[in-house]
Amino acid sequence: MDVKVKNKIYFILSILVLFSVIAYIVTLIPGIPSNIKGVIYVVLILVAGVLIVNLVSDIVEAKANNKNKQVSNTIVFVTRLAGYIIVIAIALSSFKIGLTSVILGGGFIGVVVGLAAQASLSNFFSGIVLLFSKPFNIGDRITLSTWQYGLIAPSYPPKFFSEDFLVPGYTGIVEKMTLTFTTIRLDNNIPIKIPNSIVLQASIFINNEEYRNVKVRYEVPSLIDPDKFMETTKSELKKLSFVKGLPSVFISETSFANKSNVFSINAVCKSQSEDIPRSEIIKALIKIRNSLEKQKRH
Image (cartoon, rainbow, N blue to C red; front, side, top):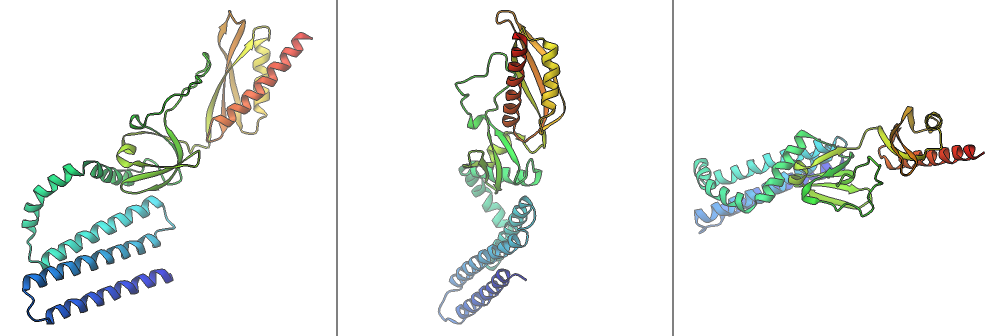
């Protein structure tokens, strides 16, 4: 058994012995009213119980540390929730309070607390749903898109013939999930904590796929033979190490004003991001166009 776990177990036993001795000493002190003794017992039970529950949950978390983080968080949460319920039940029973009285008295208090802490409770229950539904896992690279945290579109829009679209969202690696917040480390290495109620309503893009389809539209002067350009493009792009299979190349539109053809290139690339493969494909297209233009002039 791990030394830290052993130390925590010994500490739990020490707490039990210490608070038992304190409770016994209280019974020996003359002149203390019974209701005061009851309050002291309840306080002792609550303090000792909370300490023990936290220590037990720490031991459980240490044991489950090598497993899936979401499973670990769920186990720790269930352990603490069950422990606190047991501690409160023992404390109430020692104070001679019946369960029916607690339910009736807690109804009104529950409504007041629920209204006062609506946002916190929403995050709490959303966290439970996320832990069990698992829309993503710790370590996943995701894009979170939500209207609550809207982003302003950049001032440099794509060219008029581009089919690209902008996803207004936050992209990064999921680092931690608690019952109230989800922590994502963004691509710029800045962590962001998002309330679980927001995460539960958001559109989530999972970016874990090994391959993705990268689309590029490229404008070529009409003087270049389109069949020659398509044939050369397929041949050259297939040589790129990250391109899987033969890419598709076709004319998507023709501009008579600019005397040019717009080609669409679809390539399945091994990458979790489209930016780097697109850059390499565009560089290859520039070389192909320059080479064909040079041949045409000669």
